[in-house]
Length: 514
Ligand code: GAP
Image (cartoon, rainbow, N blue to C red; front, side):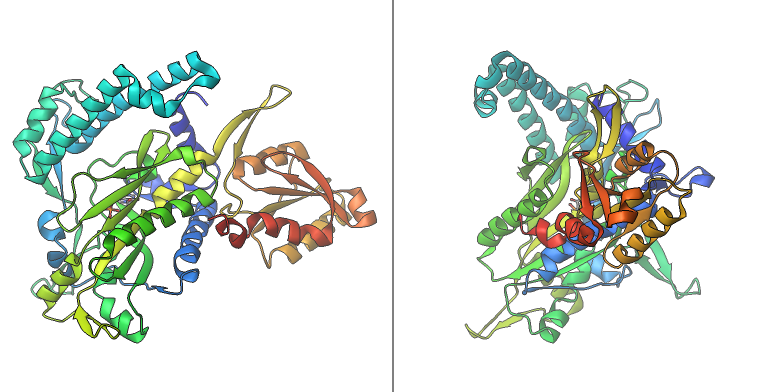
């Protein structure tokens, strides 16, 4: 596909055209950074959630799952630090009247330098052919090293300023780099100000007694406040984990890039409670385990990288992001954070309740440390969907649009197509096959248009298999099964369909690759 911007536009329009993602309240001209998942999108999202849940909860006998409420006692957010510190540094352009996150303006500036590095790599790869060694090139080429040093120095300067909340220095950096507003093209900036990202609401009917609440900005706190309840009722022994998936809300200012940054989104988080002092070992463990989970989906090792944080949040002693190559470049997909005992201690202090663990083997009480893995479900959806969308030039020089979703995640596993829709016997047999398969898989029936067009439609829809029922099927109980990615067709017995499909879509087959 053409350039990255075109590819991203195509991703957004394809998501709408094929019933994956719609703008929220579209008939009222939409609501910015809020999206609805349509008939196929809801299935894909559910399959991603299940894939995560199976890997994290079902496959680990020391991890359990919960489903905490979105509303929490307001003191939760005081204790967690969100009331005082969950802010974004904002800056306005006086000419366009547009508001930006100051750190994102600076990061976008760095991303442009990174693009220059990628261009140098491409040029060199072309020049040196098979002899090209990317690692060596990145660590020895003078121009690339200069670019990289520039990026490092800018990000470190920004990190230091943000850490000490020196907002004047952040503005000075934007001015020093000559960053212009993408709309007005001018450098006419206001000062940088902090803005809290939590949405407020009220609980209770009367104005006097109503209690100020927040919509949770992360699911993690629902786990921390339930730590002791789960540990006691589940008789959990450290190390153990509590996982959950659910909605979170943030009043994001830079709300663009489709479902990458939303105001209402879903997280899949796991807090792993460990003995203090073992966090280094568990940080390494979860870094590797989470990367393996991603790689099991076969979306290409080249599309992932770790980004270790230099600037750590006040509660963390180590943190890394798993970044994915989205159509707009490498960006955070998942965070892995070593959060120490910060959260539990804060909740102990604010609630006055002990949140400690009694270690029977060592006969000691302690506040556990926590290793967190946190991934945005919508962001994972975008990674899967954008990576899957491809345009292929075929041998006869026509192109086909194909959504090569990992089969385990595809919303519809197979489409059943009677070759001729007016042939009642073919239609009946097709529907009989559906009746049988639908107990195990999501399947669809498609009888409209020539079979070639139906194949294309299912390719674009991401359906891994098309099963065509023809005259021969009536004679010998066989059908053709066409594979989406290779377009290969095989004649198989109807009774074998379940086994053939299962082998390709079964969660076990995919997770075993971990
Ligand atoms: N409990 C830790 C936590 O919430 P975070 O880095 O703020 O950490 C974790 O968020 C993940 O949630 C991110 O890596 C991202 O995938 C997802 N996420 C965060 N903000 C988001 C947003 N506005 N829209 C979509 N996904 C978001």
